[in-house]
Image (cartoon, rainbow, N blue to C red; front, side, top):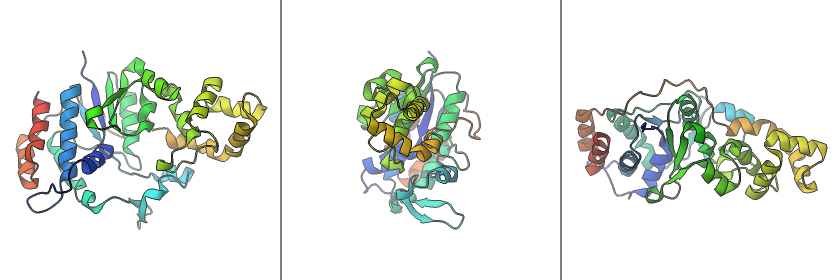
Length: 303
């Protein structure tokens, strides 16, 4: 059995670590390290459970890419803390987490899984690119259901979904997507466009929720088919037809915003499992008071 390439949606996981571990966890100098330790424990469990080969920490070099905002101005707009001098945006993130992100990067380097990002792209795009390139099985680890779009049963690409917590991890395949939403993974982009997503600032089409979106896709195959039916006045209720036609400008651009990039400028995935720098890892564990969390990751990788 070929060990899968594991692609980590890093921000999704370190946010989970931050909110899942007590804020009282600090380094000897008082720096909060609950997100660092939480992230390490997450990695240890993932490695021990799924026995991956290579592991890639996919990174948001731009959490709100300008090219996506240029298409839909509301994209993640509610998460903006301030506009920076270079025209990019600072995300509204707790300061106690902000100080831990450089430590997380340093720890990942020591573990032999340095963060991989792409200029003006999100971690989702790195994941989409590496998953598309892969010639063997892939496990994408995320709490973001938008990444269900990369699932491909024929190629062995699946999602390890963390939204219900690390004690209730869910392996999501095309069959699971069909059971949950009534659409195939290959239809997920169109489904998400129609439904919308307030957490990403995507309005969707008025009056079309998950059930209606799934029904329209079952009847017409894809968004292009739905729009053609609306133009022809066939196969949609009068209300749905009116709303689809009224959303034409949104529907012209939203699929590009929702669909992950598969050609981001990222290096090839490593060919082998991570090889930690043990001296660096132990030094970081001592400096930041990472307790047994670092050793649990090292043991999992060694196993």
